[in-house]
Length: 282
Ligand code: NAP
Image 1 (cartoon, rainbow, N blue to C red):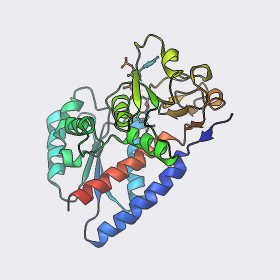
Image 2 (cartoon, rainbow, N blue to C red):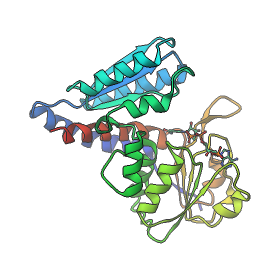
Image 3 (cartoon, protein in one colour):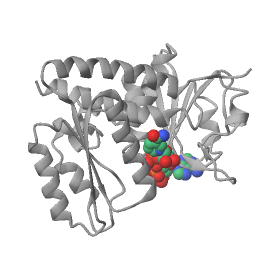
Image 4 (cartoon, rainbow, N blue to C red):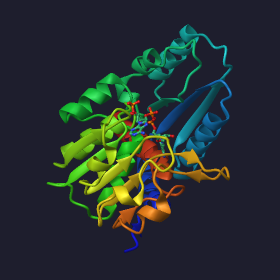
């Protein structure tokens, strides 16, 4: 068996076209969805991420501003900027790129973002809304994974989903989203005693670890759906995921590639959330 690819680039193109259409409709009513992206310091990876986010906004017709501050910016000054953006009527979504310099308390900054503008979905109010099934912004990466499952018409009801990783931005919200669709969910992490025993039971596996080859073919039940969130570099410096793609694709029914899988979907869901924030502001 060779797994079918879930193509994150193709799905992103489709969803971004829908965002662009709805954005044009809002603009006709005098509202341009606006995203503020705040970067502190000059982390090269963060610079690439923020540039891609701003570019994606422009392509879909959203307004965006990129505020890039020196790494020495104080926590108080950053809080003041976030508060100003909270009050800015042209800005519907605020994204503070992580990681922040060590002298800034990232959680304090996230909690300063108005929940109505928390398009990254990291605010405790957004996390609480997801947990309780209330309306709120879902973190973009797991939200994108859910869209990928939806794109193949996969019904999660009664299925066993195993999430590898328990971070606040990927693993935990992912598990809650799968649970909300009536999957039976197991969350694995670095202290899981026998990861293979868990993954072999899974109909759906989401790998969100940040280590190459965490999931190999012998750990996957034939016919499973495998979503690879990881972003790593192989020995040649090429981008790769957490999953041994060549091996696992021989066993799984569906698999997401890296690159071209979850990565583009994350930015797409940021656009979706920013559009929703603008629509909700009317
Ligand atoms: P993180 O905060 O470092 O969390 C990693 C998780 O993996 C932790 O819960 C950790 O367990 C677990 N883990 C570590 N080693 C493990 C092992 N050997 N077996 C099982 N679990 C293990 O990372 P993250 O922010 O969630 O990101 C995870 C990966 O996704 C990274 O590669 C990141 O770059 C990527 N990512 C991609 C996108 C995208 O758009 N494609 C977006 C976000 C993140 P403990 O909790 O016990 O330490």
